[in-house]
Length: 238
Image 1 (tube, rainbow, N blue to C red):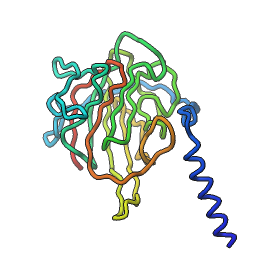
Image 2 (cartoon, one colour; image 1 turned 90 degrees about the vertical axis):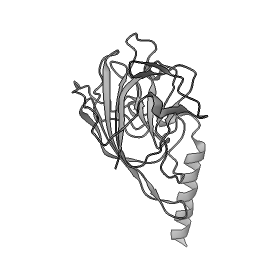
Image 3 (cartoon, rainbow, N blue to C red; image 1 turned 135 degrees about the vertical axis):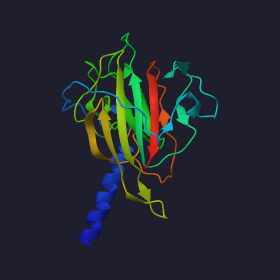
Image 4 (cartoon, one colour; image 1 turned 90 degrees about the horizontal axis):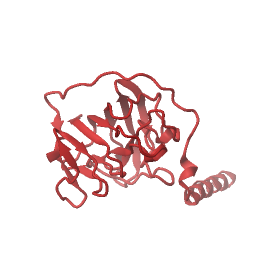
């Protein structure tokens, strides 16, 4: 009886904590602050990669890409909304290059903000984190509101950054219960910043991760209102 009562109390506490979080600040982590390091170089697409050029993306309603496109560079057009790959993916190797605006406007989360969502749920943060302090689990290279990067490998505003991502999708049983977590490895400008990191669930702005069952899904690039640019994007199914 005592054991059952203890489990009951723990369950009440668990669901109580989940229900009470209504402030985004409650899930911000500011310490420790990842140290800054100098970045490395980029890589070209391998022969078996799916190239994620402008024609690979659509908006949520299926409309054609409305972001600005010039010389193979795709730039967020404020207010048009996020874009999504036409094809769905699970386990994958993803490469992309991105650039925060050279002209600095805003600070913290308001500066060069976008995001890469694996399976349309799990965000690797894109942010101008060059001499721009914000909460550590929300800076560039973080698994948003979950795991801060090991270091800050950010290039200065106006210069290109690279993300090389190895992603292992989560698995769910027939009842929709998660039986294994997603894991992610991220290199930022050639520097390891996430080392086979467990993704605990979705990456919401407010509240804690959730784990609804899902299958393969699209890659999302976020429209957060800042003119962040992307180029040389490719993906390999694993």
